[in-house]
Length: 493
Image (cartoon, rainbow, N blue to C red):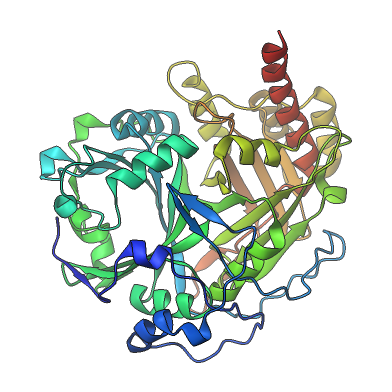
């Protein structure tokens, strides 16, 4: 295990049971909390209140509750929503850093995703590197990093773990409860210690206290929703992030993967994580919770009237950081509809809230889909059924100013959905669930338009360009409903 220094003398289990502080409902960013203030904040019972809420989370026999401040927040729907950016982040959030999946067999999970998405396995921490606690394999394509971790025997000491927050027993319990699922969404911040202190001071449930690895990498975790955590990563020397040694640019304790152990030449053109979508039973408390400790602002929203079908629906809201490149959409089911909402189905099979899907940006979605579809029947990922021909017949009227006739034809051949807003165009497609349960899946997207120049003259694409497929929600719902109907017919038979 790399040299680890814990900033606070408290353990994650104690933190997990600590009630939250009240969540601020204001967009005003208060003075930052210093790390020296954190221990007293965590243990000052005069400032802590408890209240049962839909954020209740269980891991094993533990129950966690989260105080929520009801702020009068109410969804207004797509047509009435006005996007503003108050620049209200409570701490600097640079980008998505990685996503960690907890599973029972990291080797096979990593190789399947490597093959299916064209992401080389670039680093490892396992028995061969001296890690007796867990096997972890890191996939990377462009700026996208996926980490797959599985436990060795829980009876072995965790002293050799490369990820200090990893717990073998917790991973076993997590996998038994959720199946294959996302444990951590990691963001790179300016200072993990400050991010953690500020988050907890504004209502975040602590998961793992700050730790410094090899005196250069900061790591801390707070609860996101359900059993998923938001992980903060920071570097004392950011220039190391371009170093070829993963022990420097990722985490200490990871070593380069032998080239022959992966699929380095099968690049599908996937470049970064665009957004990570969560499903929750009730939207408002979770939005208030996340806004309260991050300061993120509302970027978009949709109601069942905007995106539902005649049989089911959902409500959705997107939270964004100041730069609007770290996006967290959240969905809640609409109950009492003719059919059970796909969100409700997810919550049942996942046994609670969790990450529903990850949207991955391609720089050429046509090439990406051709490559991925070649691998669908040989260990890759299957896709949701394509829309009917009428969808593409109408597409010319909606997208002829952006896509050529040949590109529209390719969209139909590959099953790609197209949507536009007043700023840009979105091309998207969804896989079927990637595991045994009808829970987590992958979205492949390409955004067109919204190009800007920064102060240094560098051209970049504005975050969320083209929206989130509001015009395609109905088609997506229909395809998921049809997929679920096939499962139901089997059960009935």
